[in-house]
Amino acid sequence: MKIISKILSIIVGLTVINVWLFRSGKATSYRGGNASSLMEEFEVYGLSDYFIAIGVVKVGLAILLILSLYFKKLRLISASGIALMMLVAVYMHLSVGDELMKSMPASVMLLSCIIIAYSSKKSFN
Image 1 (tube, rainbow, N blue to C red):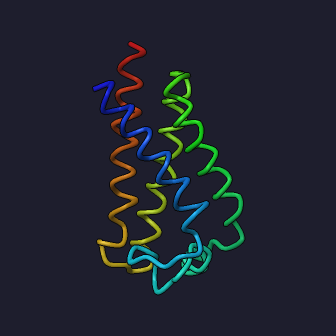
Image 2: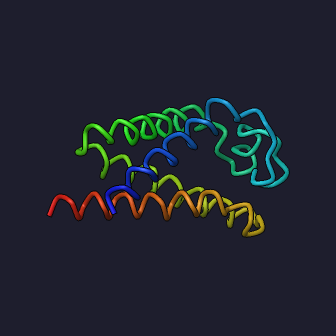
């Protein structure tokens, strides 16, 4: 379980960083509504005023999750934080009537973070 947790930590961390820092201006089939960028997606959800703040929090948590490979105490808080953000992302997709496929990446990240957090919590016991 520790190996899976570490692998998922790398995947989730790098994915969040990739989406926010390198692919935010690019269209994907998973963007909410008819958005062609991350900023447009936030406009669809009515969250454009929080775009920068959410981005800083998500990227910060992703960095902490990667650092948790070396500093285990960071794993639970970073995985839990990203899980919460992904839960909200899934909710936002559903609230604007997106088809389920558009919420798939956030759902997979949510499940991954739950596994990471559970594994982390288990190692504290």
